[in-house]
Image (cartoon, rainbow, N blue to C red; front, side, top):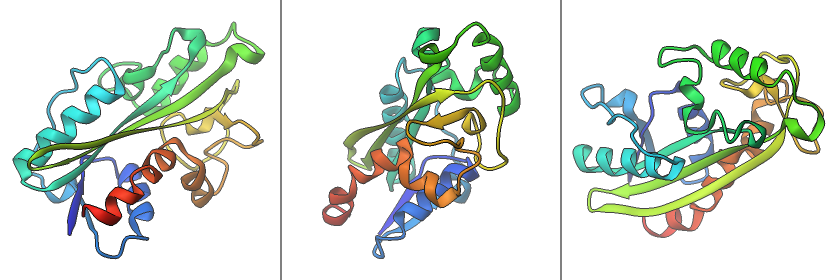
Length: 197
């Protein structure tokens, strides 16, 4: 059984491939395997709306089971920014580094609990017949004052998970993949993967 990860991000695809290893009956591909297909423009007002839009569209067009992710960093002190705009916080063509620098600049005045934040992930699973399931996962922590670490991507070098002392960019990839918001959401689909697919 094939399932398509609705992403072009090599980081996300690798993370999902690692999670799917326990399901020997599922072959994992991604949009890198379907260069003729383009995801619809994200027009939703929430992670849920965007994830569903991507999953349903890709499943219909590709005639495959599809798992779509929409996720990002939420900082309550910034009224939820960067939120659904995490990937393009500093502009549509912004790099991860530019997004991080914008976030650091906006948080200069914040200290202690004002630097609290969380990663949120919404996963939408769709078949060619339509949406099948939607799940969520979160990972709470704080934003530090400067970047630390060489691993990860996005805001990982600024994020320290609660009860940890290293950023997501400093800890082992295998550890991050075990405790991340994406993993928490994925685990809520385990029974579905075992029975439906």
